[in-house]
Image (cartoon, rainbow, N blue to C red; front, side):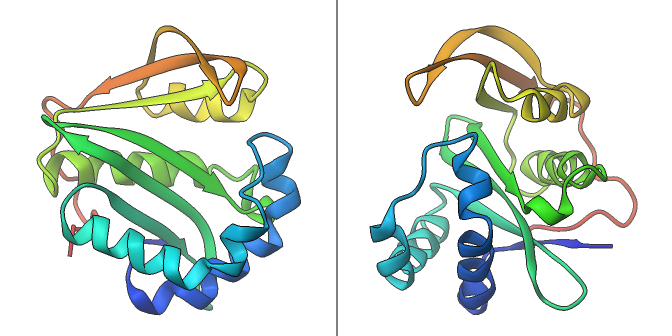
Length: 172
């Protein structure tokens, strides 16, 4: 079973491979990161770790048995007990409930490890898989929005009353 891990320096090679292998797949539903993202990946990775150390964001990777990155689940712009949830799962790992399990695990971490009280997310109307993951993970639609110039929906999830399930990952 893949494991949620807090992003660390040693994840860089596997994370870069994940982004490169899934670039075209991700670009079908979200704007492409652009060539500069890959050229300056090491610099960007260090910047993410600095944001995480400052408590502004928490970046997680979903790591498989061989150390490969199968997904990312991020909590960004942490402020006043809330953060934006974002995630992406490798094409080869879709269709097996992995995204839902990973999002749920990070929601639990957000409440029990980081002390957050709510999360929000935005997805486009044409991204049915993402909308389903959010619904299955306890998010509710709170309004319409735009994501990358496309019509979308805004979601929110209260973390009130969330306790860590037995064997749940910790924020360490």
